Amino acid sequence: MNDPLIDISNLSVKYGNISALKKLNFSIDKGDYIGIIGPNGGGKTTLIKSILGLIKPNSGEIKYCGTSLKKSNIKMGYVPQINDINRMFPISVKEVVLSGRLTKQIKPFFRFQDEDELLALDVLKTVGIYELRDRLISELSGGEFQKLLIARALTLDPDILLLDEPTAMIDVMSQRQIFNLIKKLSGKMTIILITHHIQMITKHVKKLIYLDKNILAEGDPNEVYKYAYIRPIHQSISNKYREVRNNV
View 1 (cartoon, one colour):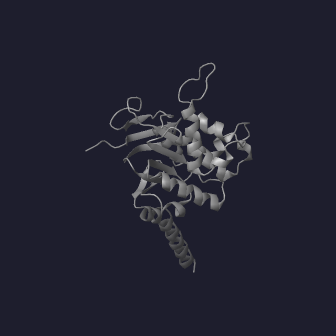
View 2 (cartoon, helix red, strand yellow):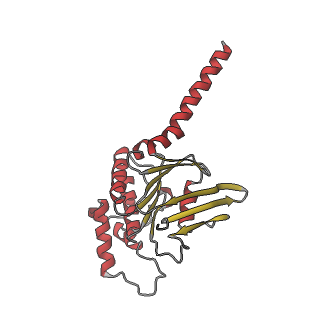
View 3 (tube, helix red, strand yellow):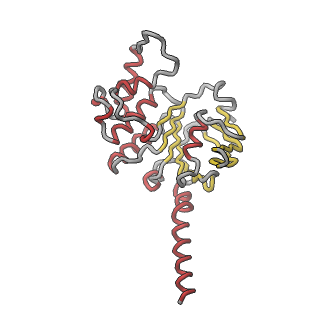
C-alpha cells in the first residue's frame, strides 16, 4: 500500500499562548479534492501554511509520501487570500504568472526561458484570462485576479494545489466560474480548498472537513454540512422554543 500524499500526525500549532491547531490527525491521498470549512480563527489557514512548510508546528509531524518535505519530490502550488496581495503594484498579468517559475534565487542578468513564456501563456488559457496577459493587475476585476493567482500557482505543475478562500470578495458569477475551474483541475491534481461558501462547494468536493482547531467532522460533504450548520440551527431554534415555553 502506498503512503498518503500528505500524512498529518498529532499536529499542534500555537501563537504565543493561543492554540491554533490541537493534535490534528488526518491524511490526504493522491487525487483527493478536500474542502475545509469552519469558523474564523479555527486554524484553517494555519493548517495550509503548515503543510506548505511556512509554519513550524509546536509538536507532531507532517510526512510527504512517507518522508520529509525536503526529501520528497512533491510540488505544491499555493493560492493565498486575495487581501494578502498588493494589487496596485505596477506589473502585468503575464509577469505575475511568470514569477511563479522563480523557485530559485535570481542571478544578475536573469532572463526567463522560452519554455517559461510558453507555460505562462498556456496556464493563462487554462484559467480563461489569456486575452488579459498584457493588462496591469490593478485593472483586473476580483474574479479575474483570483484566476491570475491560480494561474501563477499552476506554473509549478503542482501535485497538490492549496487554495485559501479563492472565492472571497468576488461576485456570485465569478464564484461559480472559480469553483468550476477548480473542479476541472481536480481531475489532474490533488486539491485542498478553504472556503466559507459551503453550499456551493458541497456538490464539488469529494470530502469535507469541519475544522475548529481540531477536526470535528469529516467525510461526506452533505453530512458534514448538516453537522456543522443545520444541526446548530435546529438546536438554537429548540433552545429558543424551550425558553418561550418556560416563560409562559
